[in-house]
Amino acid sequence: MNPLLSADGSPDGTNGTDDTDGGLGAVGLGGGAFSAIAPGTSYLDTATMGLPPTRTAEALRGAIDDCAAGRPPLDRYEAAVGAARATFARLLSTSVERVAIGSTVSTSVGKIAARLPAGSEVLVADGDFSSLVNPFAGRGDLTLRSAPPAELAAEVRPGTALVAVSAVQSADGRVADLPAIRAAASAYGARTLVDATQAAGWLPLRADDFDYVVCGSFKWLLGAHGVSFLTVRPGSEDGLSPAFAGWYAGDDPWAACYGPIAHLATTARRFDASPAYLGFVAAAASLTLIEEVGVESIHAHDVALATAFRAGVSGLGFAPIGGGGSGSAIVSVPGLPDAAAAGLREAGVVLSERAGNLRFAFHLYNTSADVERVLSVLRTV
Image (cartoon, rainbow, N blue to C red):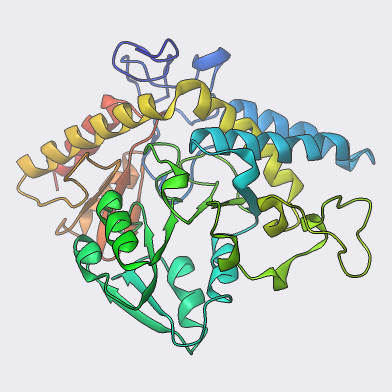
């Protein structure tokens, strides 16, 4: 068992949900990993936005105070960019030289979309997140074809240039069969693009299994908006447009940031966008917690809670989405009465409504008490 987790697989401490089985918060990892969570709150909305750990909030406050005092710590900003890039690489089992940084997933996807020859076929999953799909649709001269997520591998065909899919669907938590998609794409000579925004941080992934992986940091990685990552497998660099290279993509950005860039970086840094420094201060701090606890341990913890919740909801006569395979940390529940959302929020449950369903997301600051809180409300509506 990971030494940073309690006996039930939760990080040590209590989280303000009146539980005693090892949730994070007031005591928590390292003196309070999530000490700011309000008492009586069950936060089950990581699929919208993850909660910043205490260490992240402190790092941000310090950076903002320094900046407001007229002492912007550029050296520490740069160190945060480097640290975040390196930790993300380790979490996805790749090398730091293969990781580019950006601000949003859609801009990284746009660099791939811009490079495809006119008429190229891009295969996507029905209802996948717009930031992954729309850059291809926006071209106007590509063939964009979609299929049900479970059938994506079977839909790869001769002439498919790229398969783009979320590792975990945002709307309902369904986990893609990435090995099957990778095998089918390889058989037909198609490249693969995986959006890991709803997966990295709880679902074990190997970036080098795919041509490209894009990921926003503000959900399961517990970072902030304005930070994204892009991994590029060796040999796939030609699939990214160089037309969007800015000053930070140079071999030595600070030495040559005027006029045309004479020498782009020789690593994936050539695809970097200028960093949102405060966002990277947050990302660097949060990623240390993810790495310390370990993605495998977080996966076991998150999925165990989601599985227990899924069983409880099924026992109440509803048919939750988001199971199957190795399980998902996200559970979407259709068919709940209109009063359910209001009752849950009144009880201190933070959740989201997506695609007409209520969506619950379980992460390392949640415990079995959060599961029981939701179920106790659903039993009464």
